[in-house]
Image 1: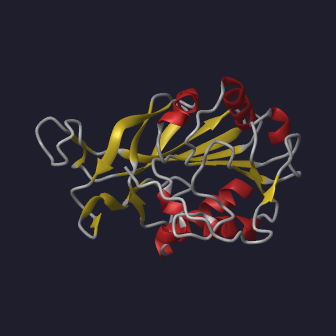
Image 2 (image 1 turned 90 degrees about the horizontal axis):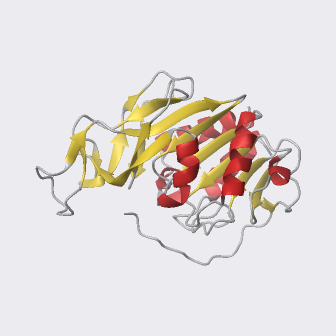
Length: 253
C-alpha cells in the first residue's frame, strides 16, 4: 500500500480555481477534491499533483477543483472530470450524476489510491479491482516489486505511440462488461500477495493483470488507472509525463 503523506506548503496562486456548487465554466475540466483526497492539484510537494495540473492547463485553461458534492448542476458545462485518489465514498446521487455526465458525452478519468471508495462507481462502469496491490517479477524499479514499469500496451488510440510508463503501488483491474477494454497490462508473472506473507508463494495469484482500462458509456468515455501515483510530481518522469499529456488532450477533446 502506498504511504499516505500530507505536507503543508504555500499554495501556488491561481493554479486551480474552486468551482461553485452550482455550475462549472463552459468547457471546463473538473478535478474532484471533495472526497478526502490527500494529494492535491494546488500544492507542490513530491506527492501532490501540481505538475499534472499544469499540463491540463496547457490544453485547457478552464481547470477547476470541486470541493463539494458532485451534482448534475456542477457537471452541466464541463467536458472532463478527474477522480484521483479519493478516500471518501461517493454517494448514490453522486454516482448517478457522474454516470449521466459520461452518458451525455463527458470524459471521466479515474486513478485509484485505495480502491474501496470507488467500488460502486467502478461497478457501474463494468470495472472491477483486486483485493490487494500488485507485485511484479519483471521491470521492477530499484528492486521494489510494487514499483514497476508497464510495457504491455494495446494499440488503442490513447496508448498508441507510448512505449511504457511506471506505477508505484497499483491495483489490478478487470473488465466485467463489453463497454470496457484493457489498454495496459503487467507481465505474465505479476502477483498479488493473497496470504499476506510478502513473498511469492503457492497461495498467491500469479498471472498477467490489467492496470489500465477504457470504455464507452453512451456518448462519453472513461479511463481507469489502477494507481494514482503515476501523475504525482515525484513520479512524473519523461514516460509518465507523456502519458499525462495524452490524458490532458483526451480530457480536453
